[in-house]
Image (cartoon, rainbow, N blue to C red; front, side, top):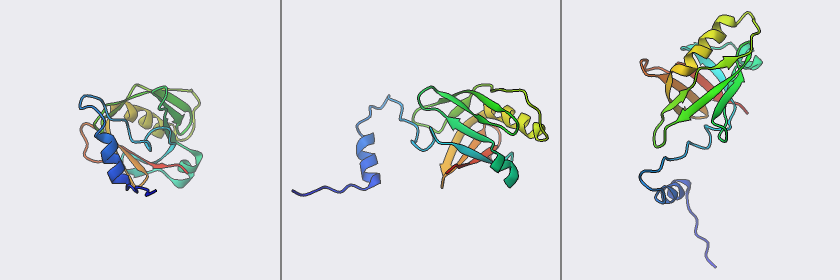
Length: 144
């Protein structure tokens, strides 16, 4: 018996050819159900201490909700992915009400999420963009 060996690009091409033209393509597996740690907020690095204390983001593939821990509080909302594109949007976010020294950064973070219109992923780094700026507004690394 001879086994057929397929490379990932060949396999992806074969699988994508099975989809109908009007069906949305699924989001990349690595975008959803992956915990993302915030590394940059509006082009400014998040300090290592802040990154370790954990502003993060998780997009749940089953419920269509997002959530995580911001600088001071737990937060959440919902997200929408548009098939066959890199379009990603977030609802306004809710959060708990604790205050901390990083409150202004948390407020900015929670304001930026609903302004997101698209994403890119490269080398385990998620960049979120709004409609008006060419540079990413939020940058995350995949948490190990």
